[in-house]
Image 1: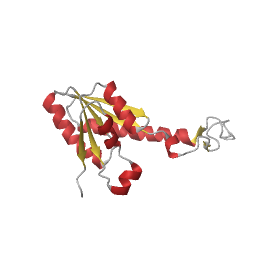
Image 2: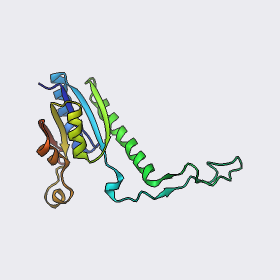
Image 3: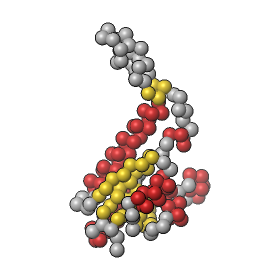
Image 4: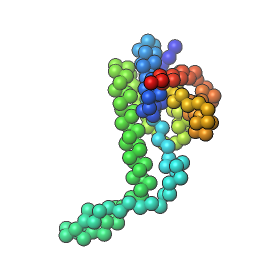
Length: 167
């Protein structure tokens, strides 16, 4: 019934709650789990692309440490984006390792999370999407929006959502 299951994760307790369900389904059906993390572009947070990070003096330049520090400098935005990607890669690797002997594929994509999830489902030929929810209600849900809700409404394949337990 299920050959490919997409498991989008942001490393949150909500996503963790869905992991056990995903593992059980994959083991039951011999399915491959495609672990996906969506990294949002920093532009969506309103960060300027012209912020510069200067290298400390002496790291680039002559042997006496009189380098300008500007050679090889990167923008703060690029540095932050790389850090976020590295964190996302760790989230995906951790989730894949917690799936034990289940066959897994990992994916790290940049873009709007719900769009990345829908595209990921198409790319891996998913039969099912298993994802956690944050359990937001009221004004928080209205203002912040729900990735899970958008995926449920727009997905061409079934979506199993798992709400994190209240603690």
